[in-house]
Image (cartoon, rainbow, N blue to C red; front, side):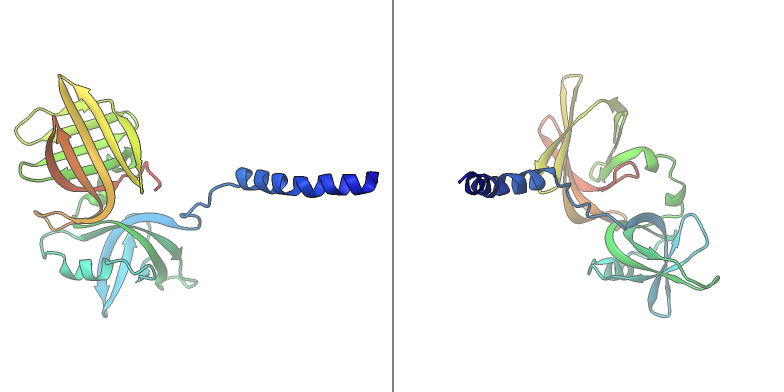
Amino acid sequence: MMRAARSLVLVALLPVFAGCQLLNSKPVDSNAGLTRLQGELVSENGQLVFQPCVGQQRYMVSDGASTTLVQDATDMPVKPGKLFADIRGSFVSAKTAGEQGEVKLQQVYRLERSSAACQDPNFKQQTVHANGNGPAWEVQAGGKGLILKREGQQDLALPYVEEQIGDSRFSLSTEANNQRIELWVAPQRCTDSVNGSVQHLAAELRVNGQVQRGCGYFGGARND
């Protein structure tokens, strides 16, 4: 009888142990094994080739995630400046010196015409960057606060609070000089109406309830 009782207790505890294992399991990192790099895109023989800002290795782009990079690069307005790209993917270097490696694309953060983006001194410190037009505005957010720039107005440097809303959406909010300032951000492909750049976030700047729309991207200090 004692053996039977002990067996019943062990069977009853099995679901409890299973529940504990589920609770203790770590969330899966969707970016495991992937690398984020910035650099220049060029077209060679109908194939996109990526040259990182740092290093000599070049990578043929394989768009296994079915992003819109190839079409966006084709449609990008022809203006002065290199075709800058900020991407995440699986990078495989060439085994032989001088040959091209391959990058299996997973995420496009930004695509734009720029000859200075690789030298942006603020990129690594930023968590979020957003901008819009009509009139022009820009938000640079980082670990020490945010800077709000607006056409015709003095720049504001302010602390902020970030709130996660769900579905990877979030907002940054602050109050200063009797003004309520909010930046609402959502994961959505967004095209700048002035320069044609493509960014991976849609953004709304709200100042005392007045809304201006724009685009945004994660800076180098954010690993989403």
